[in-house]
Length: 271
Image (cartoon, rainbow, N blue to C red; front, side, top):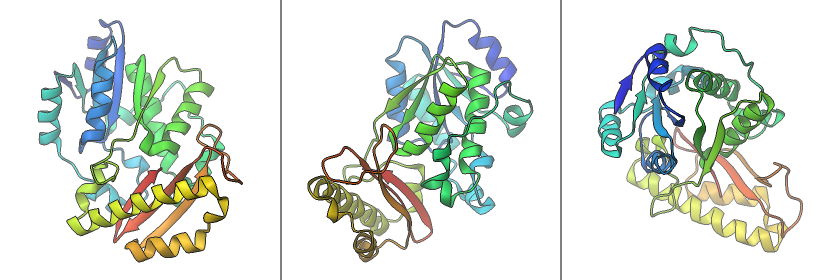
């Protein structure tokens, strides 16, 4: 595993390769990240992982400062996985140049997380656009847990005619149903149990809505979730994952999208 901390040295190295499979991360690597990396390694190109906690996608400085950073542990995991390249850039390395492509922000950025985290998706797409320009990967591997983010990155790549192809990867869950997330490390055992109960409640609810749309009663659902231990709900909505239109009746394919808090820890999921 070769480690790079500046883009120019990295670019000189990867110019020699036929192509790159890219897995962007903010560190705090868990089984979800590891699944993306293992999938990347099955492709014919060399695997490049980045670790960069992007300040521009955080709404609060306190959230940015408290974001889990586990670089030593991450390095051990990546060595064991035998990836080809690791890129750990500085802020200046990423933001010290003007990218050739302008960010395209689809209108769906104003929904779901976009309503509650102003500027978040602009920050995500800004950094992804820069990584794509620096690395020019053949493939970029992204998880479906952050489905809105995945959709918006896909729209940016299509609109700007970027040649990189997105490989969508399934959400990886703990045995208790909780989606792996770096933020899970901020939860205690009781809070993990609450998150597990929420997952199973929503999974059961989805089955009911498929049979009878009247079960999508937001007031009742929010009361049930608070009874389970949720401190606050930013949103709970249903969308068709192909066109991101809301469903109006039973029988349609959809996911439930949720953002909620357990104490001061914000979690998102789609089921």
